[in-house]
Amino acid sequence: MNILLAFLIVMVILFIGLITFKISPGVMLFVSAILMGLLTKIPMSETLSMITGGFGNMMASIGLLIIFGGIFGSMLGDSGGMEELAKGFLRKFGKKYDMLALNLTGFIISIPVYFGSAYITLSPLVKSLQKFTKKNTISYVAALFTGLLLTHCIVAPTPGPLAVAGQLNANIGWFIIYGILVGLPASLICGWKYADFLDKRLEKKGLNHADSSNKDNLVETVLADELIKPDPTKPSASLTIGLIALPIILIILNSIFSLVLPEENILRQTFSFIGNNNVALFIAMLVSGFVLNKYLVPKHSDSIWKYIDGVSDKVGNILMVIGTGGSFAAILQGSGVGDALVELLTSFNMPILLLAFLLAMIIRAAVGSATVAMLTTVAIVGQGAVSLGYSPIIVGLAICAGTVGLTLPTDAAFWLPARYNDLQVKEAVIAATIPNTLASVTAFLIILLLHSFVTILPGMF
Image (cartoon, rainbow, N blue to C red; front, side, top):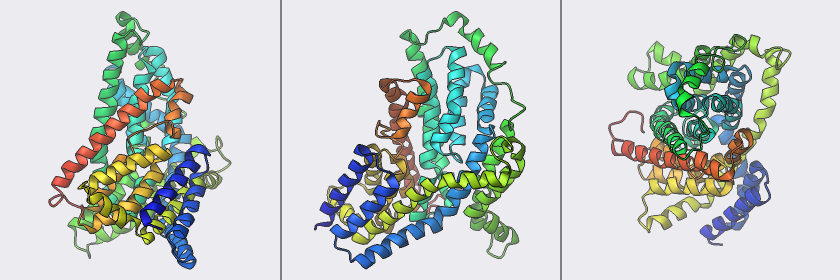
């Protein structure tokens, strides 16, 4: 069977399984891998070898990161640290910049914490703010949702970007640095400023349900009082942000020292170990367990070690999706579909970065999973783009940026504002789909700008 026809059949089956029958992504990715092998007549022994090899390679590159990162993020959430960080930003920025505070909170928290968990944890703060300020909930959701999703999709060490960087053999430290450089402006423009614009527009339409003559007084009283005052029973905002920054700083320092110091330098050798991705997150997990012990025990478990065991069990689903995604990616690469697709689309003179971006966005919209879209897209065009001389970081970020856009009802994330903040479908489109699609395009334009300077920027190759 023609490779592209086989790929089309497999993708249709994958979409139907995920969207219509709500089958687990891990199950469907594994089924898709087997089916692709059969349709392209790869010998069964080679198919099995590719499946296990793809799974093993994915686990070898990011398995420990997902485990340690998942536990680390859960500690920050369960201890109440994320909520205190959000309130700390509100105290810092004040009533005029509450949208900015929520947007930055989401952007930072979603680096170590899985998107869904972070949104669920912070959604009560949206309700509390709206109750007292009388600003429209849609505006607050837009600011928070956009910040959360951008780092979830673009900034490692979240699972999707980690998997993309691993598949392209990109340096994780530089991938984080450039991911932040790409994601933060997009978050501020399409999260914070969009939310402010939306709030003013809704207010003009009389949808904010507030008397503008006393709104400022209400906001000032609340932001100085009960709503955002520190909770002594939870970790402080400064402690939380310090813990979040710890592994990122170690990883980035490793990348910088390896670039500017000679190989025999003791500082470079030290940070090549403690700044290793796995070791850095392991250190962050242990430090967080020690520091946050009194906030986690006995509220969530008998001991910090039992707590870690309990969270480890929950990480298994993420590992399954990522691992089977690696299996599917190995089959796609082995079948040659990537080369065939790149050759086909190149004949239409479509730039490969645009191809990577649009393909990731379309798959995300169809299957409702940013991680699946990243894994599929990087398997199709990733290695082909790198072999043509493109920077693996630029290619990887283009793929990641594509998965930010078109957050539609096929994605469980789309329904979080409806479930936790009482938004209707139309309102969820305004608060989630529109700003994140704008953010996706904005991020891609920034990536193209970086690509134009790729030869002089550090860490690109």
